[in-house]
Image (cartoon, rainbow, N blue to C red; front, side, top):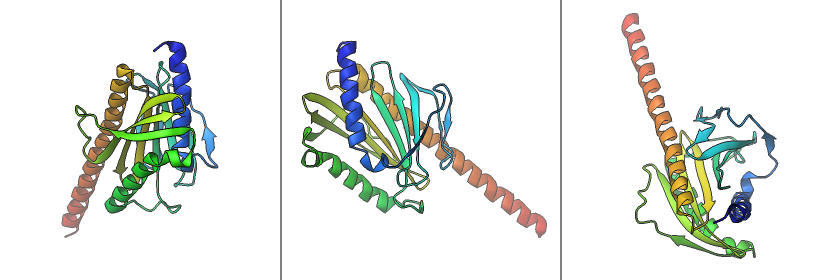
Length: 221
């Protein structure tokens, strides 16, 4: 694919990502940060680096309403966008439980499949299988082929639960561009590694707190 063709496709893919994320795009406070600066999400304490593989962080979109949440957008030189969403399911930011997370994934997946009935520009959406792709533990990954007008694209949804928050990744790219497909998988794997490291760090803090509390109890005795 030529650079010109990639730019056109990138615009279509970005529009599709926005279309798929309408609930997260309403009434948002947008703030921009330097591209080479890490972004720390105050709710999860996750640190999103400026660079992930071929992707560079280009924008952070934040809303104080936790249902709209935070969107961290990355983009690479080919024009492929990768969006990471951090959000809750109610305005009180109540921790999402595992059963609710499972239900939300099914609803999100079905919502993507139903998009042709919601928007005439989306001609078709079909689920595709990637035999060589191993699912990431603790989350759900789904792959789709979308006919968006005259543009055909593949799209990945990854959804997981992290300390009561929903973390969603959306990436779309041309099905003819194998390099971009591989880059998309590496991006998802990098984010899941970030989440796993955060979970491990949280467990270590919890264990340290328990040890300190036990020591205080013994001292008090």
